[in-house]
Length: 422
Ligand SMILES: O=C(O)C1=C[C@@H](OP(=O)(O)O)[C@@H](O)[C@H](O)C1
Ligand SMILES: C=C(OP(=O)(O)O)C(=O)O
Image 1: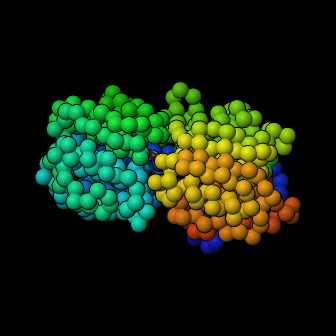
Image 2 (image 1 turned 120 degrees about the vertical axis):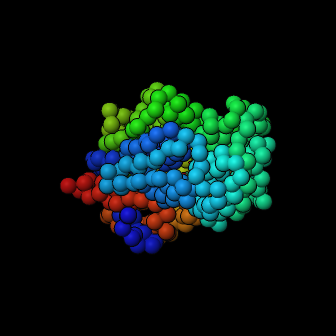
């Protein structure tokens, strides 16, 4: 467990360039998919390099509530799930999905494999506003019935007979991924016909590839990549502090499962960073021009760029992010509000933000809206030495909310700062 942080947490700026090394936590998206796929396997599967965070603990607790045997070893970063080949042991369970989108969507589809099951789902207040209706509608076409189209709901399940279902996944790609994860266990082939446009497409490809990995052979071990979204904060750090950071555990290239690695290419093409092996290096002051990019395919990283946009020359324009208004919080509105508090000029549309850098206003407490990405993104901005004397000028409210995906984030940042002074 991460140690208790002061709330609000003043961020100590870096007074020297940041040469240091970080090891990424395991990917949230891969860990929570692998937990589901391991539960569906015919044999025990051990996940290695697994993430231990609020979202993955929620998934483990839910699998146990459903009757699966799951053993975790946090020191070793391993989790073993005794797969039951598509059987869901418990016919009735109460499942708390917190604010984990992956758990919410994937478990809703998983329990439908059980004939005659009754499952009571609920989550955080924020989850009650997040999209699930499209998935419930698709599952209803397979014989499941829910007593509400939003959390909380009780889901009565009837197995997955297969055939064609229609799905509107314009709100979240996780609705598609949820069906794809369980489809191989349907009685006859299950075909998903998508209605309308889908967001966050690389996450659907990740699901397809992982389903194929688990289907190809009876796995006993599965290695989890480092979290590429978490890596975005350490890609941004040298832009803020100068110097370079070594990022261990990031998988790049064609083998990479995570589309969020596109953030690195964006910063490289924008000449904000350069990469040599695992090292990410700032290209220095003269190159710090604002960027324009469509973030639809890797939107979890838009907050990382938006938060450091005040330090870039000229405007930064971020498009393709309307769907993020229905995530942990309304991320577009929240980001505009926090940047304006810091004195920035922000033009907000339904699906975009344009940030025009202005002189930063010190002494602000950043509201985090129970959203880990606000805490971590503005945590990186706070590393900028605004006053030139190493004194904090920005604080983060509820910094512990980073525990959703990266419980030790602020410890890692502080270690890097200390390393920069050595
Ligand atoms: O499938 C996944 O693991 C995810 C899909 C994306 O969500 P949406 O499809 O809701 O955009 C992403 O934002 C989320 O952090 C993880
Ligand atoms: C959108 C996110 O999470 P979730 O899995 O809850 O959708 C995120 O981690 O940025």
